[in-house]
Amino acid sequence: MAEASPNSNYTNEQMTRFKSLLKRVRQAGIAVPTISTDNSSALLTTSLTHFNPAELLIQDHITRSLGYVRTGGGIYGQRPAFPTLRDVSSLTASVRHVAIVQEGQSVGYDRAYIAPRDVRIATLTIGFADGYPRELGNGRGSVSIRGALFPISGNVCMDMLMVNLGPAEDVEGIGSKVCVGDRAFLWGPENETESEGQIRLQDLAKKLNTTQSALTCGLNKARVQRQYVE
View 1 (tube, rainbow, N blue to C red):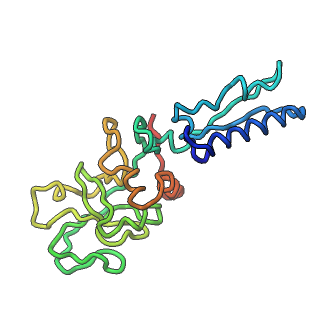
View 2 (view 1 turned 90 degrees about the horizontal axis):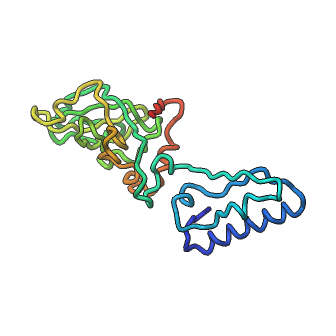
View 3 (view 1 turned 30 degrees about the vertical axis):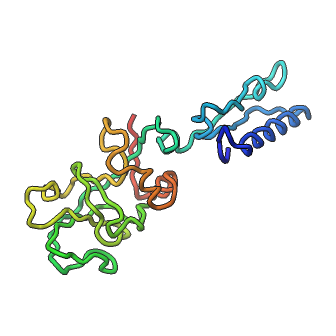
């Protein structure tokens, strides 16, 4: 289902070829115990009517094939074309260090960020070796801490990244309250009541001209701990 569109001639042709092949295999006396067609998009496109059990699953008067479908990113809400889906994956990291960086001092690889004034900088326990895109450095990306958004300062490092919590003299803003151990959200819902979170995975994918699945599949399985919540 390369396109999975009800208006696609290619989609209809693809299913026609599949059903033709299935018929010829069965006519040759070869049993087909299972068949699989739909992906996430095809399952969610209700106007597609190609899956007819009477046509696809009945092999003969006695034997029937089992039909399977495969859901990929759809089970994680990663199909923006279908607004009924809800994002269910979040990427988080902890605050490891908070420091005052003085005016003129630099942050990170290549000294890509030079503090224009005294600022408060937090270091997070995630970097491009974990699968967080390096392209989101230098203010292009942001993280959410305590419900507030803070821009990434400097280049994303291999094992960490830094975010700007605001001016050092600010003692009333949320940034001044951030401390070691706080959780930072890099994308996704921050609690059970949110549908997408402040940083939507689909927005990051669009910004980087990639797909949501490419971002989630790019996370390092050995370094990034998975937690599954029922």
